[in-house]
Image 1 (tube, one colour):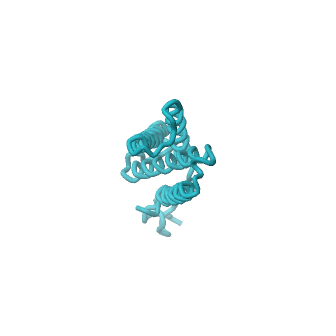
Image 2 (image 1 turned 90 degrees about the vertical axis):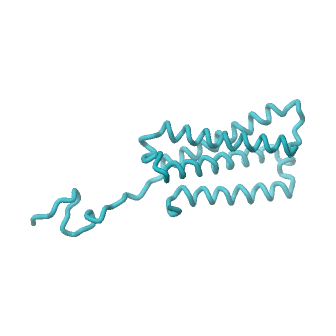
Image 3 (image 1 turned 45 degrees about the vertical axis):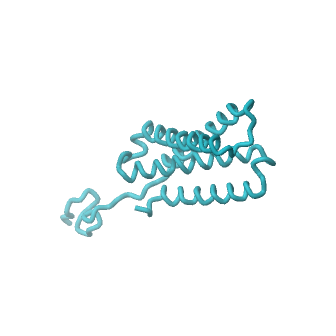
Length: 153
């Protein structure tokens, strides 16, 4: 289950996200570099979408990313935006944001746009990775040819 490529990818993204957020908070990068928040939101959207795409493929809701491109794109965008909205609500209720009320709407919109960009990146990653073919036991037997029939020679 955990050896599939999407799961390790999402865990690497989560580790990078936590590290950047911790360092950025400690060194006040959110206030020193206005673009830093966009990077964090893109990574957050990438992580959320990659986890949900992995979960959907693991639960066999998406058996082929190529076959279900629209479904996987919707999963990626909705999951990234859902996590983004939850984060914005927590930020608002916990009063973590230092944004003034005049620009709060614009800041929230750009944050959600950044989350969506991360979701699109996750979608692009998952629709382009190559999966190893699954071989059945008879495919590897020396008396069978490629289509599973017994060799007569």
